[in-house]
Image 1 (cartoon, rainbow, N blue to C red):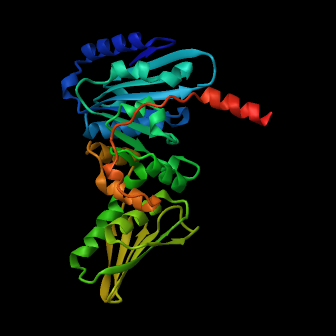
Image 2: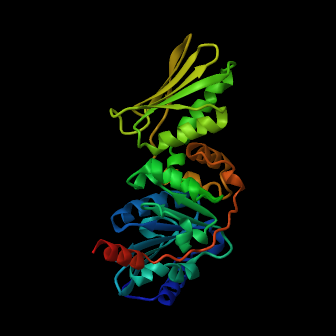
Amino acid sequence: MTGLWDTTGPEVTKALAAERRSAGGVTSGLALTLVAVADEKRVKEAEAAATIAAAAHPCRILIVVRSDITRDVNRLDAEIVVGGRLGPCEAVVMRMFGRLALHAESVVMPLLAPDVPVVTWWHSEPPEHIANDYLGVVADRRVTDAAQSPDPVATLKQRAADYAPGDTDLAWTRITPWRTLVAGAFDTLESQVVGATVVAPERDPTAALMRGWLAARLQIAPNLEPTSEFPRMRAVELACANGDMLTLTRNNGTALFARTGQPDRRLPLPRRPLGDELAEELRRLDPDQIYAEALGALAGISDLDRLSPTRVHVWKDPALAQAASETSSS
């Protein structure tokens, strides 16, 4: 590991090249560049998740930590790891202070692995508009996590309003096991589904996307049965035209599958670590049309997958916004 304190972008680039030569890194073996934007308190989580994901998808990991962005100071500290604690990958952890943090791309762009896709992942509260963050504009895929925001369901609706093909959210990834089990129930289902109910807390983003997915796939309007007894989605119930009911209920890493007239079955429904969820999103680098349909159904916006995948960077200075806010309140 090489540490550079109060350094510059060119020095980081040279140090990474030197570490690669020393460790025998081969850029041609990389599948992508993963740019992770994280708050300081979540850096260790981001490193651990990126390490798991990189084991399945060899990549260059660039972790960007922004601090004190409204202060009139500039400082860049960097850690360069090729192999070592972050596994068999190339990684640079960059802590940017002051106005430099608003121009993170000036440091990140020269570090992108050549001729491979770029995935930007925000392990922090998602930006309101991705076009305001150049690190999102240059990415082929953009991964947010609505659960990191104070109002996750409202954040998902904002993601729909700001959507471009290539966007996704880890709340969607977290319901992959649920969607697999629900879809599997249709293998032996002959009657049409006419209603659905999702039992979950009102602010659970996974439940919101599950309702959007059911609405998009089945052309129905799923109900939400709010519960405060459980921290996340508890059950999915489907009502059939012939009167049959199908219910999937989460219980300690398994799901109880109940269907009218049939014995109950227990099916696996594990809660996966963050790194596995991130690795799933890195498996596909093309737009996720099913996610777009589910997100659009949730927000009441159609044809999201037909929008342009290209964004144009829109500059926004948080310092100016803060100054305006302070002026209006005084």
